[in-house]
Image 1 (cartoon, one colour):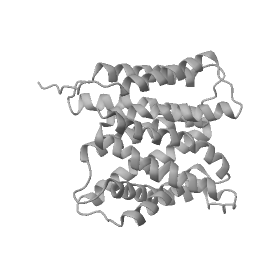
Image 2 (cartoon, one colour; image 1 turned 90 degrees about the vertical axis):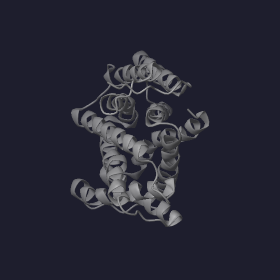
Image 3 (tube, helix red, strand yellow; image 1 turned 30 degrees about the vertical axis):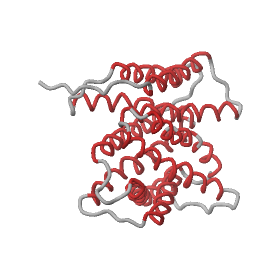
Image 4 (cartoon, helix red, strand yellow; image 1 turned 120 degrees about the vertical axis):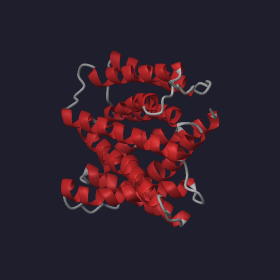
Length: 287
C-alpha cells in the first residue's frame, strides 16, 4: 500500500460529502438534472484539458465505466439524498467495501485480508447505527436508491482497477470519457424524471461551478489515481469519509445526533483507519 496515494485520494470523498449542501442551493433543479449537470460539465471540462478520445475497445469500456461510476451512481445517490438527507444517503456507501470483498472472493478467488474484513464489518455496524437509530426518517425509495448507488459504484471501482488505463492515454482522459458518457446517459433520464430544467440564478452559478470543478473533476481525478496506485478495496474504504463530512455539515446546520449515531460515526472513523493501516497483500486462493 502507498499511504501518500491514499491520503491524496481521501480528498475526494471529503469533497463529495459537501455536494449535498450544494444540491440544496441548486433547488428547484431536480436530483437527476443536477447529476447530469455535474457529470457532463466536469467531463467536458476535463476533455478540453486532455484533448484525447477513446480508441478501439475503450469506447465501450469507458461507456460502461461511465454508466456505473457516474450515470447510475450520481443519479441514484442524489435521489437517495432527496429522500434521506445527504448525511444518511452518504453513509450507505460504507457497504461498498463489503461488496468488493465479496466479489473478489467469489469471482477472483482472493482471500480477503482480516483487516479489510474487520474494517468492512465496523463500517457496516456504523451505518446501521446511523440509519436505524430512533428518530431517523428513512423511506423505502431513499434506501433502495442509496443501495443501488453503492452497487453501481462498487462495480465501477472493480472494473476500473482491473482494466487500468488505456495505452497512450492518461488517467485524466479516462476520467473525462467516463464523466461525459455518464452525463450524456442522464440527459434524457433527467428530462423524463425531472422535466425541463429551470434556469439557474446568478447566485446558484458559483455553487454549480464548485460541484463541477472541485467536487467532481478534481475529486475523481484523485480518486481514480488512488485506485490505480493502491487497490479498489483500500480506496473504497475511504468512502466512509463522505458521510463524515456530510454529517459534520449537518451538525453545523443545527442537526442533532443521538448517542447511537455518534457511536456509528466513531465506528466508521475506526473502519477508515483500520482499512488504511499498512498490511501485506492478500493471497489468492486456488483449488
